[in-house]
Length: 384
Image (cartoon, rainbow, N blue to C red; front, side, top):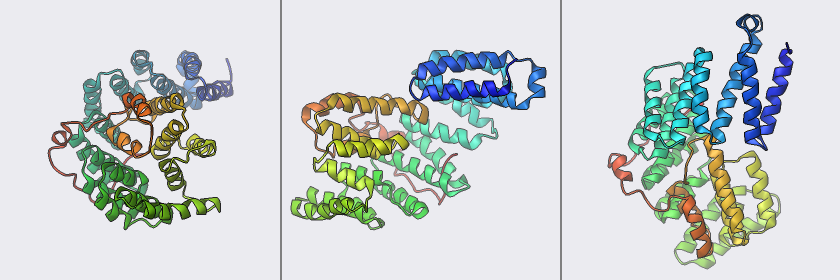
């Protein structure tokens, strides 16, 4: 029998493989799961670290299957692992729900999550968070909002509070409620000292200039102030005012005093994308792969450099990553489309990108939200 260290080494190797070849990693984890499941109970009783490793390997095996889009296989493995390790029932049920959703059985998957939430398990907070995000992605805005408000109220620390507020802000964007977006963004600022850049992007993309001005009153960062006040000037026909605000921003960046989001955004908005900017974006996105602000800027930058196929590949890569980070979108939301379209791009390139985004407001968004504005939660917010 191999030593536990050997199993650990195989596990670490599979995770490293996953960074470059997801399907190969799945096969490595499958073999390792099979070997660990074949260990006699007396061995696991004698070596608790092996029992713990078996659970971690099985968890990652299912995660990798879902990430690779092998949903039918993942659902079959959920059944097998549920019988072999019934003590991890909540995790297996959660994976079953997510794989049902990703395979197109959205209503069934949401019902599984709702039933799991009713069980009042130790993971209740996490399940509520997952359900709220999946409802948001499914366009069930009213139910998602109510769950997110509970998360906000029950948050035990600032990190969870900010996550819940961010979810509520995202839902407000999809139902076109600028006052709620501003309110949630202000509450996030109270927790983090930073106004979310994405909120300002969305207000600009919608043309809610008065609401954007109101939110900018809370922004301390001078780069962000300059960028968005310049965008307001441009929208109101004051091109000279916009250039005056943006020029110092670019100058200060060269001196090393940089706010990356504002610098990147003004470069792309003024069609100054080049390979150097691309390098900056790729370096940061290697560490923050689902940063939507920088991901959208990179897509627009590649288009401006005439590399439309690469831009499409970046959109698809973002969608693929969201299989793991959740929610998994078949197309990126309308709020993302509005934020992307602020950047100048040739009309033919816009049409190439269109199939990868929801490109118009859902007609029933307000109805699904109950026909009312989103009310800010009592100071609180979401999961961990």
